[in-house]
Each structure stands twice: as C-alpha cells, then as structure tokens.
Image (cartoon, one colour):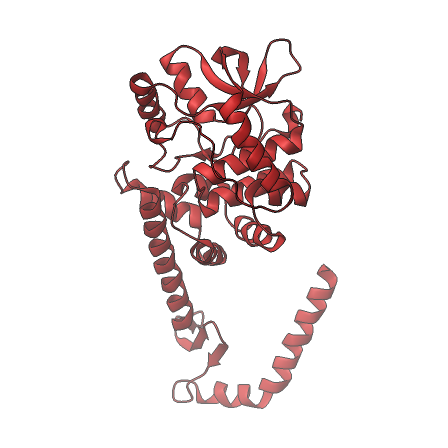
Length: 327
C-alpha cells in the first residue's frame, strides 16, 4: 500500500500497563476456537512466535502502514527503553519484506522498535510475507490480544482503515468486531473533531455512550475551544480518562448555560427618534412578540390594532417574495 494510504500520526499515549518487562516470553498457549481467518491467524501467530524469531538491525525497518494508537512518541517510550536495557526485549515485533532489498516494513510493535532504537542493538522480529490485508489483520489482532485498545483508539483505527480503502470484512477481522460493532464506532468518530480526540487522548475506560454524549454537544458549543481552555488548567500528568471527564463537564455546563440563556430570551425597548418608548420586542427560543402599552401610546395602539392582521400578512408575503428571489 503506497504512501498515499498511510495514516496520519494521530495515535499516542498507550495504556499504562504496557511494559516490555511485564510481557511474557513467547510460549505455546492452548488453542481456543475462533471463527474463520481470525482464529487461524491467532494460531499462526502463536506458532511463528515460538519458532521463527530473527535479529534485525532497527535501521533496516521502515515505520509505515496505519497507526493504531494515539501519538507514538511519548514519555513512556523512554520507560520502555529503560525496561529493555534491564531485562532485554521479551516480546518480538512483526515485520514483512519491503520492496527495497534487505529492508522490512513494520506490521506491529512500533513502540518496541522506537524504544530499541534508543537503546541500541538489534530487534527481535518475526518476518512474514503478508499482503496488506493480512498485515492489517495481524496488527489489529496482536493489539487486541496484548493491549486492549480503548474505544476511541479503535474508532480512529476503523476510520483510518476505511479511508485507506480496506474492505469491511478485513476491518472486522482486524479488530474482532461485528459489522454492527464497526458501525457503532464509526458513527461516534465521525461527529468528533480530530483535534479534540488528540487533546484528550485514548481515555481508557470511557466507552461509546460517553463519547457519543460528548459528540452530541458539538451542535451546541465549540468543543475544541472548551477543551483547550479546560485542559490548559490541568497538570500535564493528568490521566487521559480524567481529561475526558473534565472536558465533558465543561462542555455540558456551557451547553446548559447557552440553553438557559436562549430560554430566558431577550427584550428590547423600541424608541422613536426623540427617544420616547414606542413598545417592546421580546425574542426567545419559542416566540417573537411585539408589545404596545396602551397607557403610553393609546392612539398608536388603536391604529395598530386595526391594521395588525393586514400588516402581518403583508410582512409574511414580503418575506416569501424575498426568500423566493434569493433561492
């Protein structure tokens, strides 16, 4: 898949519990029955992990393909590098041969590769000759087995895969989702600005309903502006899920304030050229009202009453004519 199909670098902040030292050494695992290509792929991954690991120079591996997490380079890469310095690389990455001689393309293990480039030395890698579809499925399944991506990370990955032209069946296999499950993720991500998601991060533990509720507020308040203002007051170490809650509370509060302001409406005193009050114009979310106080302008009030219906119809017809001429 060419460079034109490469995803934007919008994935970062992986789950806290991903530590190289905590990952188990490759070992045979009891097979579980899974349908179709997903089950076969998982069994295949286990077999090749146990038997086909090679040492490759990191500079011979190209970082391409779709990203499956929010911003790859973050402070946790240094923690992972330190763990590899102490304990070695416990889990191999997977690569496939490149079109260029003696080079490879990453399938999964981008954070491990970035950490080893800091540490130095070779990287343990499984080399497989896979096409684009099989590579994507391997990438998605490995992440699901080891990392449990958050709802919004899966949603972004789905969006990237669809925009890159992958078929629905491949996308479903890559994440182990049904057709409806893919649709549920896509409906939410389509309503959210990309910048908002980058500001909040993966937000592990925040599900479809909560992200959907935040997305629904986009029609009422400027989500990105509120998020920037809210997050600027939080410490840099604030967990992503807490960032989500802070942004959601701030956006909900703004939306309620806007709704209350609209419900209260606005009343304007209309005056003549000398500054004397003629009447009042009241506008709220439900109606527009013109009020003439008979005590202040009894003669004008009588005159308007006699002509109100005719005048209102004339104004309505004028509006229709202007609307028609502008269409």
